[in-house]
Image (cartoon, rainbow, N blue to C red; front, side, top):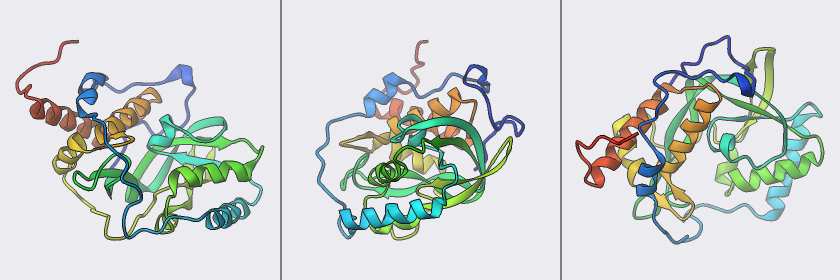
Length: 256
């Protein structure tokens, strides 16, 4: 999967965002609202081992030690862009070479259920991913890392997807922390056709919201920062069409 942002525009100012036409998304607030419904949280997924507080603390200490006192950058490619759980003092665009966005993780909690599983986005091997680098404040660095782990890493099995990667910027490479990179295990489904992914995203919803909502917010906020992932753009078109079909609006054109 390859983003179509121009290579020279790896970093931009908020006031200088470049958009890529057509800029009007097919997936809208109104369509996303059709994907939302109340769902109960059935608790942790079976056959996965939640992190204890002691394990979380050891993990946070390890990452703190690995940061080696250098500026702490986090590479955001999905929900961390529009729903960060840290205190950032700077952001810039960056490109992670050798990785691409992929809805490859089966999810039966949060934005899916055991009866209607969803798909979560992760970084998979190959290609290039344009995203956002956030530099975290140096104040309470350990606390910042703890917050990230609590948000992103719920189980011992998930901890293996946290890694440091080189990210290219307009000023050279920086070492950044990234979550959900290179997932493995029985939940991983790689190389799914976009049409198959769209069918799942249009239908899955959990107690934290729907998969369609997640896709919509990700694409929207990437666009606002001048980044377009061509596969996500195509996917939002397919999910919009699925929602129109599910709710009986076949052949109906949305008004502006």
